[in-house]
Picture 1 (cartoon, protein in one colour):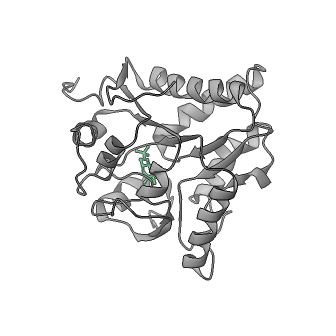
Picture 2: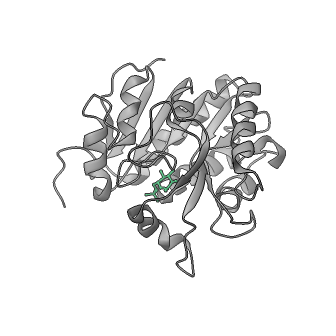
Picture 3: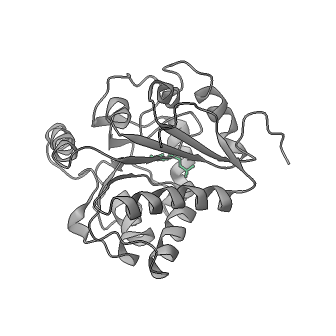
Length: 248
Ligand code: GLP
């Protein structure tokens, strides 16, 4: 079902919102077991992966024929570093479901030639036939993937420098608080190439970014506003992240 309007689905709390996102992924895999999933990291996604593991254990969904591509990865972090998005994905999802790790892709933040690794990533996505469903979170400053404010609409996978507020927000994921300052991320155009997009935002800290993104036109100051140019985006929010919500 195509969703051509940007009216968000607003659920009572973060768990219900995450469950609704998980159900979208489960339904897709039931209909199309070899679907290509675009996956995301961030604390917002943790309950989504928790729900997917539960559904897998209950025999409702299999990932064995799926392929996955994650949005981004830090540059210079070894995949075994607990803060890397590769190890995060393994820990939160891949190690607990029936997907062979060879079918999961995360940009190579350790490549000696990042530009080449970025071009290879775009090619791998194209060879997989493109992404069926891209899961997205949103940064407090409106970033998607690691496309910070100012990222061009036509950007593709590339190396980027993270903004100070993103480094601060992500510090909690690093025991030593040393967050890498650069990352490799799918670009805005890469994200918009997905056939469908599901955005999940929960918590009051995301409310302002969500409101800007839903304003209806692209403003480079809020990369998530680029999603208004896509014909099939579903926004799923909890009540705290919904525009106009008052602090509890
Ligand atoms: C990170 C990720 C994004 C994610 C965002 C929000 O920087 N690169 O893909 O959507 O931050 O993260 P959180 O869910 O922890 O707020």
